[in-house]
Amino acid sequence: MNEFGAVPRGGDCDSCDLNCDALHDVLDVAPFVTALIDSAAGCSVCAGDLDGNESVDGRDVQPFIECLLSPTPTSACCLDSGQCVLEAEPACSGVWLGHGTMCVPGSCAFAGVTAYRPQHGTGYFPFTRTAVSEAHEDNVATGPGVRINAPGDDDPLGEDDLVEVVVETSQPAIALALRRTNPALRVWTTRTTLAGSEIPFTNDRTDTLPTNGNSLTIWVEWAAAEQGDVELHLEPLAADYSLDVLRFHTFRSIVMALGGEDQAPAVPVDPNQGTFVLAIDLYRQGYDVHMHDEDHVAADGLGTAYAEVVDAVSHRMVDEVSIFGYSHGGGSTHDLADRLDQDRAGIGVFEIVVTSYVDAVENDSDFDLSRELRRPPSSGYHANHYQVGSFADVFLDGGPVPDSDPQPTGRNVETTAWGAGATHFQVDDFPQVRDFVEMNLTTRLMP
Image 1 (cartoon, rainbow, N blue to C red):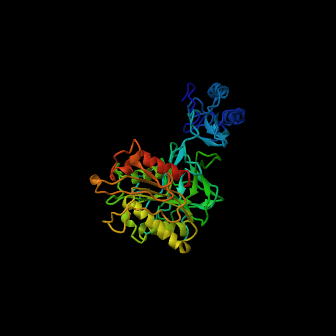
Image 2 (image 1 turned 30 degrees about the vertical axis):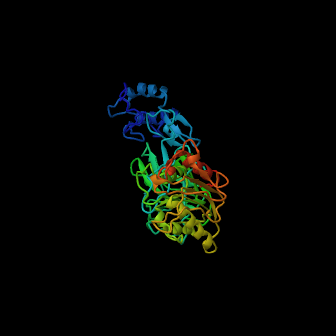
Image 3 (image 1 turned 90 degrees about the vertical axis):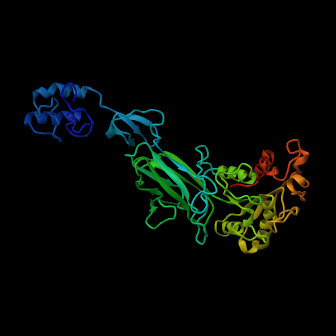
């Protein structure tokens, strides 16, 4: 109670609010007079009883006048523009943040969404769960990429075309909704699109999201057989402004990274396996990267790596391919590109945009020691780095490849200050080599 015994506004009962409109103003005067004359209760059990003695009488007049002369309490209100203003609750035309709240920087940005880079199979391995940074989440090229999940798409290791998104809020009592800019985007509460787990949209907006406390994990699917980009906005259900936005784009390219003999993708990545170090860097930048042991490519180019590319082109409308590899992975880069080129009529329309060898060795068997000196068929751009084998590395080495960057046949790293005396086991770990491959891939290939 206040000094006059009145129950303050916002309590269980507001004795100063005679018409129960949550305001203290002249509209309360007439019902107060009626209550005085008739000794009858107003719109609530305590209406008019400002001294708290369970009756409305002359002793309530002075505190009632004082109450009317006091300013109506205000709290933070978020308008449709996202602007925060101090308003009485009934006057708030947007989202009421609660009694006693103030407008401070970020008041109206009380919830957000975080998207993650794509999964592989039933989880993120051989990558780690990687969030799209705030700076990139609405970028059409480096924001969250999503694989087209059209009918016929084959995910033999498990559904991995949906993108994980986490909704978080510091105001769990305020209802939230999603708004999309294209119905190609669908949203589920399960990764595998279980029946009954889809969150429906009406006119591209959802009803209240089923948050559990302060967070909710949802899975975003691109269900249309077409390329494009779509914005997904998180909004308060009661207002029309964005708390946060993600801009999803469909992957138009696929990147295949092939390790050397006995190099298998692992978490954490082995820092001495430069091919996979580079692959993880590209994944973090937003590329649809797939890491493989070189044995996933057979001598004829077939295998799980081939199947991944074929599925991407045939069912996910990917039309640009990049392949790079080290040692036997370099030989497998040639074999995979060769098989794709031979079979392209039955696969679909695509280009092999970028390829790269790092000390490439042919991979007709685990014991093949022949240098890979053939340029990958139909590659639009090819980079090549190699060293000259010696006793220290069992004379393993790559070699010059026609029409390779640096022109004309690639770079013998032993002719550089940083690569002098390099062995086969070191050449893939030079940052100068990785940076060269990365720069030339990212300037030619969009995610």
